[in-house]
Image (cartoon, rainbow over all chains, first blue to last red):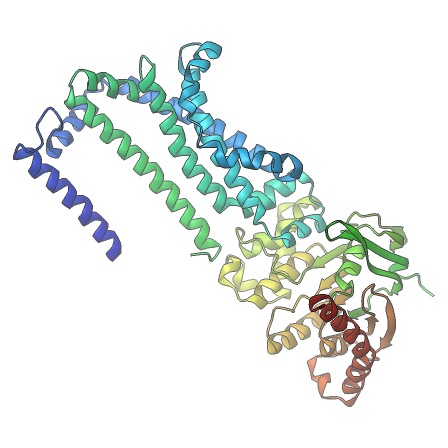
Length: 250
Length: 271
């Protein structure tokens, strides 16, 4: 590990040690937060017991669905918008202000239209992620050197072949940035929706244990989300790094 | 007398440029015939339409007037089979290794795997990159990346190779060596080569014939036969004829280049 990496680890461990000391000394009371070592113990108990498996599967499945939709629709829409300059100029200001709109405010509307169940949660995750994918796909396509497009034409590639074999691979580092954002947004969308109105999922279980002062369940679930997002992000960052290194950009 | 491989008659190109868009006469009229297997270079002042001329022959840009024929067939804004293009900028695909870069265009030919691999291997040997088949472009020098692009063109076995200032980004020594390699490839493949260059010495060293273009709108104002033997390399720069050809090129081009500079100065510093 690099020296910076060691510093980073030391900061995290110092924060955990401080939390441990403050919890054990009673400065932070047990109703507010458990000591980190108890959270770790409860985390393993929760995982081993399997009582949250259904919630975990539901959240991961819905997040994966929201993410898959956001990625596929985002990339296709990005490619099409890149070719439709007029439409893109019309939509660009809307994309720029999109994340100023609280998507969760539309939840009642989604319930009316799509009913109760998983669909509104998946749609919110999708809506949060898709624009990040569109914007980053467009960003990447804007940076594809014109000479690569001329090369594709000289090799007689069709529009679809050019997109699949030249422009999208060339734009891949930017698209991966979009994927990282879409993963985060899909998680936020799905888990946030489960908080508001759902009968299952990690978000619902955290909300339920919070209202019941069940810290032994709530904090391990928060840690679970934290670990999942760190693991996914680390995987994507590694992928991004390998793409950049291969292109001599790192 | 054999029919020319490429025939341009009255070819012109007009773009819409500026705000509000106004017609800009960039090229022509150009009349030119390329013979099978010859090495033809084009020199001209900056912005005279050299690259536009190449793109017209490649079928990448439709003409505004006139007619372009390749092997007797009209080219109407679509890249014809049998023509390969190498551009000035690095056009290697950064996400593919050298072998995959070279094999990129072969998918369209629907060759068998063994034949495709064989073609790639032969071309990599031809351009001296056999030991770098699994390297990525970022691991190569600028000259080697340009050789990858040349190999990607050669693997398609084109009968006409269009080169748009392919060594423009390289240092002088590398350019001379790449010139030698280009001459070797030209002899080995038997293809016709059409080279756009801004370097008079490069044109004088490489070409059988050199077309000199006027300032915009570019027209061919002179075609010089160099008279070099087919077996030649960069050592011909030592010969007195080389100096005479370069001097003649410069004599023709000087006036045209001054026109271009005068135009850009007048446009850039108008009171």
